[in-house]
Image (cartoon, rainbow, N blue to C red; front, side):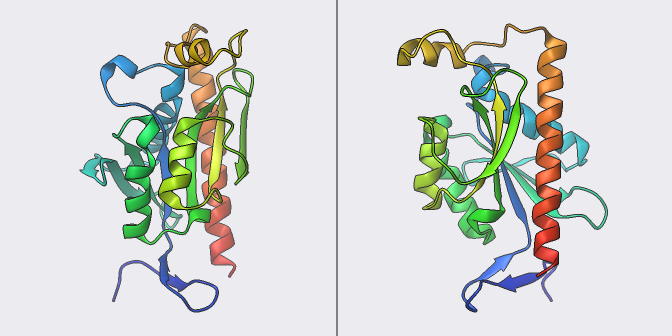
Length: 204
């Protein structure tokens, strides 16, 4: 018997897993650590600590760890694509397909310049707002109907694409305690969302 509970998609189609795929967006390499664009990696790392997940393994072109958020709680898979932000879908698409996770059970953690620093919002679907990581995920998943935890990193006083790019690729200039609070708030919102998705599946 499978160790995973399974359910069939609405019309009795392909079997789907009860797992929730949590994707942290960022760029690999120490030179990108601590930048605004890598806040998705930071939130994912905080969740992995909170959920006491095992050491990550290399798979699907990324780093992946699996477990439960608490005893008897939803089963999660955390994936950090190592493809660079612009090609995140090349990692997430195959992972989602292999794990049989429907798009509505995918939670993406990403930086959001259209939110002020320290603000966190979540939503299902919606536009891509010029975010290259989200654009790649749309291609890899074949859908925009995935959950996003939008982590506000603020916007520079310019709409020039080069200035915006340099801004998100720089490290935070806010005090470290404020950055830590932002990561903590985003992790709490992601936990709430995972619990919500898990509870919705249990009620079916």
